[in-house]
Image (tube, rainbow, N blue to C red; front, side, top):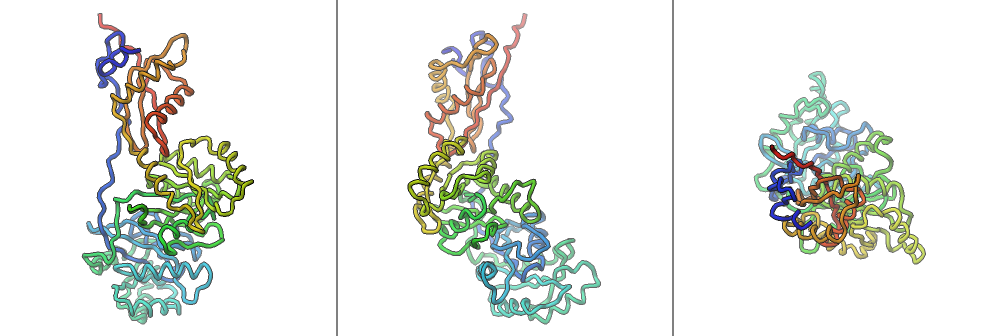
Length: 475
């Protein structure tokens, strides 16, 4: 085998002279994210079901915020990156604000109030077809005392016949009502022009886009994702309730942990299969999938006090398919006794056998137990996800491995591995160039040996095989 690794991988017949004979164009690596940029924030507020999320989607030019024709779908304040006329800004969608709200509605209203206090401009959305309600008047009263620029959007003005109803909203004392139709796009361009005029050149708070590593908190409903988000931020950033499915939209927040800034994204719990979901649950599941794909590392929360479920397995499959680094956090560890601990060890060996490489941490989002241990697990997983092994180092290792354990015979012939290269990172992707097919078991063997030698803890590793027949000698 030794001559197979001479130079750039010359075979015994001397026909392959360098690696350029092989096509590895499909393994192009993506570039790094751009540097962090400070941008202003626009908060979209109003009572429930006036079309705030629809207006957010219209501003973004794509369907991001979850929309359904029932009140209370949006519950957290959710930030989206937007741009208009060449200027970037963040749009914060909020839950419906109601005075004297109780229970979950009170938590939703509190998030809207935080958005109003921290934004650089506020857009109050009112349903022009209904007119100013007592709730609208209560919100307007609060906003009139604010030093932040406020714009009044009279929504659902689908045609000129409703313009007179929009004009009646002057009574709210917030200046000119801008007639828009979030459903059809009517008037939204003029509103965006006014928003840009109201935004300051320097944001009130430093809101960063890009830069910090993105971490998705994922798991089944009511496993403690929002509680962990609140514990990490030190504030009630996400709405928490005992009702499963409280979070609908992904909620992201910059968090300082271990001396670094991280971008944590709280996601909706996946209640059932996407194909079987309906209404806002269906769109929430799509947002969760998008959040995983947009993240660099996923923290899969599993309720340690209960048996591992099919829902946990489905979320794990989504993370594996996305090729993201992985940390498994066994939450509610404060509820685990000795018997449950022994049972959990058996479940991990049986149900999580697909990801023996994942970093595992036992935490309690409720008490804060061991939450800081997430930091080294995240750092290790991301370092593995970013890791690159030089071609020379890789082939020196490969030569020794194959000399000790050659690939199995296939069709009476011994396939030869000529050389290997790392084609990409994020996740690490390796290509082995051979003269014959390598069995799946041997590819798994190579992956395991790769992990042992180069320490890819916390990251998936992809192994691809490229088979090339020898070119016929020219006569």
